[in-house]
Image (tube, rainbow, N blue to C red):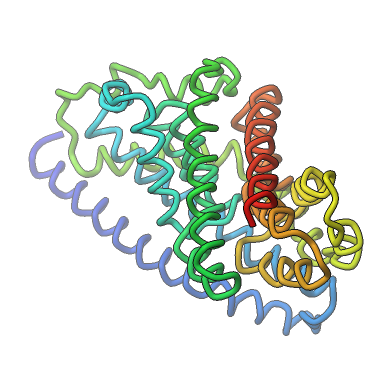
Length: 347
C-alpha cells in the first residue's frame, strides 16, 4: 500500500472511530430513558416486581456490553503501542503490593457495580497486567468509590464511612496479593491465557502501525473477546434482574435483625446471591439497622452484595476456571466476615 492509500485508509478509520464514539456516548447516556420507553410501549409498570426486574435487564445488558466493547477496543489499540510483555515488565518491577494498591485506588475512583467492573478486569488481563493486581481492581471498583463514601457519610457518619472505605481498600489489596501468591494463572480460561501472553510478532514494540492498522487491531479484539463473553453477560444480568426485582427484604430483616455471632457469616451468605450497587443496598442497610441489626453485620452484608454477586460469577466463568472463582470468592468472603466482626467489636 502506497503513502496516498495509507493516508486515505487512516482518514476513513479515524472518521469511523469518531462516528462510533459519538454514537456510543449518545446511546450510553440514554440507556435509562430507553428502558423507560420500552416499558411504557409494552404497558408494563416499573412499580411491579416484574416491571422493575425487566427495566433492570433492559438497562444493564447494553450498559455492560457497551463498556466491554469500548474497553476491549481501546486495549486492542493500546497493544499496538505497548506489548503485553512490556506491560508485565513495568508492573513486575514495582515493590510488592504497589501495583495492587494502585489498582485498588483506580477501582475506588471508578463508579462501577460488580458486573460493570468485569469489562475493565478483562481489559487489564488483555494488557498483560498481573492476575492479583487485576483482582484488586475488581474487588475495589464496586465496593469502594466516591459515591459510597458520600452516601455512607450522610447515612452513618464519618467514622463508619471512613472505616468502611479503609477496610474495603484493605480487602482489595490483601485479596489481590493472596491470589497473586497462589500463582493461579493456569486457572484462567485457555483463550485468556493466550490473550495475556500475546503474540510477540503481532505486537513488536518496534513495528510501525498506521491509524487504520490500530483501528483493525481494536476491532479484532472486540470480535474475539466480546464474541466469547456476551452470552454469559446476558445470563448473568438476567439472574441479577430477577434478584433485583424480587429482593426478599423482610426475610433478610428477620435473619439479620439479631445481634448474634452467626449474623455476620449469615449476612455474607445472604448478600452473595444479590446484585445491586451501593445506592441500591443502602436503604436495605438502613432498614436492617432500624430493626436492630449490628453495624458490623450490616457492613458485611453491604460488602458481600456489592463485591460478590452471583451474576458477576456467571460472567467471570467465561474468563476464569471454577477453582479460581471459588478461591476469589472464598478469600474476599473471608475478609468481609473478618471486617464484620471487627466492626461489631469496635462500634
